[in-house]
Image 1 (tube, rainbow, N blue to C red):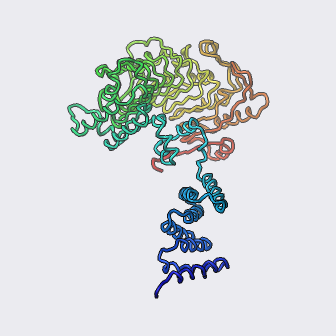
Image 2 (image 1 turned 90 degrees about the vertical axis):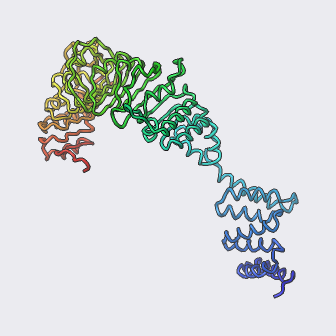
Image 3 (image 1 turned 180 degrees about the horizontal axis):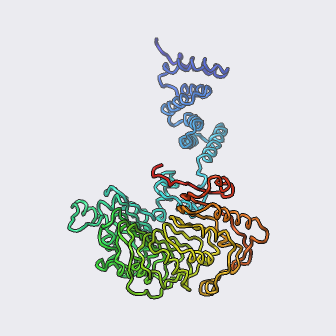
Length: 592
């Protein structure tokens, strides 16, 4: 069949007429026949068929014809105009905005295009409002405060262009650096973080997957692989390129701590250049490397360290007191190696500012002190936690804790003496004590009762491990007797002499593991406190230094697991009157 200009033009005119009569199928048929005949001679054919597709809601077909329109006449506005509308209908806002701009550039200043120009401008405003970030108007300073709450700054840089620009241009977002395997990626990340943070990394963490490979301690005559040693030197060299004066926190896992710390800070002579405040060193297995704090390392005094955590690493305690003389928090846990409290006293003597002390082991033994220790007053120490620490009868003598708030003792062979020494010590105060926990520890009832009578703010009491807790339950359910005058002296702190009940603020009680514990004392304890809490007058008390009265607290949590003499028929009563109640006669099995 021969084609001529008149043949496709006739079909084009026929299609336009059918489109005006809203005969969309007929119009589409005419345009389909005309387009092959025209052979790209007219963009109007594709633009008109795109209009039909748009009316039929065949948006992708319409978009293909609009693109063909642009290909035939890229300098005309028609294809861009229709593409902008189609992209907007397909929720492709960025493409629609680009088409709007291109169409406006090609529309002449002829007044006949004013309507189209207004339509494009309105569409662009609508698209910009739709795509605008909800927090785009927030000042950068506030946005950075929000960004600082995110753990992974890399995720911020992937949200949008504006967020990426802000994230990459502000070094404070890259203050935390965590290095893990493989070593080559760790080096690349270190270099990238140094660039983005401008060398001002504040928190540095070495995971054991990296530390245990290229930064691990070498035991005895062990020699590392040459490639690992070379990689170690590269990592340490890159770390030294950071501004180490900005590093406030350092966490090391399976790392040769002495080598690492000396390599980074050993050459720093001025104490002002070493600003590390938190140091955490942990090993998966005991016995790696030298004892932390040995003088042989020639590590300068860490006067700025306030928080120190050590796990599965021996300490050279005498040198250790020089290593960190200004601690406020010290946590030490070790497996398979005993810890003597006599060694801990060296640390206490060197750190009078200490506020929190946690020491734990699983290899307890009895220590024998040769001399009575010198008096030691820890004015700021309010949190004490000892687990399987070797104690002698004199270990805690002359130790005064005037600010004690939390006391946790676990599996201590001399726990009775610890509590007795603290109660007898005139410089120790229980007035601010809020938690007393003794797990698998022995205690003398008189000493414990005296301690409870001196603790009006006590909220948590946990006494577990098979001892007779009946006397304790009876005391907690009886009116509080007036303490001995020596117990209420000014040295021991202000303690009220009249309370409606012992430990009126108590809300959490755990007496698990006491086979002889009976139902009666526990019921009276709960019932008495319920009555006082509901009473208008008898349940009120006022602590020294406070302007208003307080009410006796109900027991909110009661745990008596393993107490086989608790009567089963009374369990519903306990569950009704105690919000959180647990009484399991048999211990839980592992994995059950």
